[in-house]
Image (cartoon, rainbow, N blue to C red; front, side, top):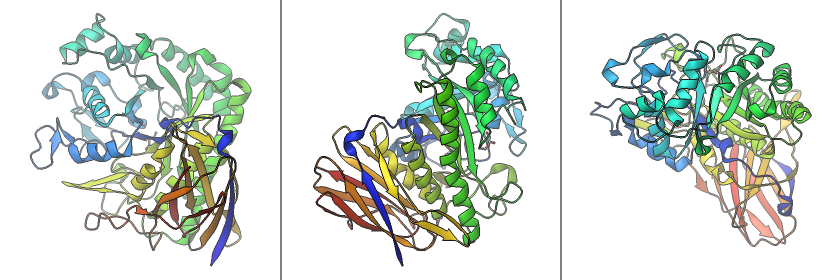
Length: 497
Ligand code: AHR
């Protein structure tokens, strides 16, 4: 049976741009994210690559329009010695990746390789600096190595390593999860450390004015955000991070495919918490920064389950089903609707780790349902947010309930509206009525991501089981749009004048 959702849109009332950086990605030295994922080595003869970076992954990421890519961690960032990852590959020292599986890290994928990848996919690099175990000088040198125009010892070293011009990397994280794997610091201690490290991260030219991001809170740790906002001068702070994963229970995160409806409902409850977290962290930021100069960046988010059977527990490899498409659609709607303060986010993670958009197995590659949602939604990148009023019915499970349908809307530079809708209801479709106020629109088209079962997913044998299809069942009459969104589906509508 079907439920009813009512939406009112005010396309004339736009005053906030949705930063494209909300659609960012994250690639850590973890499991098969880099090695055996993005990077297969320069001498690989089985998988087509350019300087070791897989060509098929580059093509898929270009299509996705990745605005920024965060690297090298995560927890790994605070153990990473960037100087070990430059120069001749055969002379690079190794280390043990103590956070993730205890594997040997041979540093064959380093700063040049990463920045080359970013150039090839057209993404802005977002480098996470080592604050937990690196010195102030190490981080200061890294900034100089990648951004100094020439003449500094670090710029000379970069040029000796084959890169003449600076990369002018703007986005820098000052540590990661400083409250945990980044050093187990208190908020008060980290606020001071941030000030110290940030001071020596220089803006080396007008083209490389740094966007410095403080390691942020975990979930609802509002004391953390309050302490940073109170103790760091706003002139030193471009962004504050926030991490939230949709996890059932950290001790047993449940299966990524064979989950029950109860487990699904709990995942959705966790995903919906993002609304509360960004609202409350933003409210604290408003107190210290009413002009909203400092951005909130949710630079880690996504679903986290038990690893696939038979895989290394430290590699965080999991399958990706329609449940993940629901997390993505719902979360991106939340970010869009909070675009005044949320101006960056990074899905964890890009390839073969957690809620990945791409999975690989030797020479095979597949695009997950999450990839398709991220791609359908990329029409919102840098478009103007249209305020949405929504009355959505409940998705009820036992005594508990959640809003079934979420929506966001933007107007692009040519005046087209893009409306994204996600129906997380496990089994009920929803009849949606959208009233368009203001100027008249005459045409509607759309795309849908849907599948018979919530646990459906793409496999290497059947990589296109879940794929985007055209959606032509929306009717537009007298400024009112009507459509039915099936259970556990994502729809993006394009409405033109
Ligand atoms: O994304 C996996 C890990 O989750 C990251 O390394 C860390 O920052 C977070 O705890």
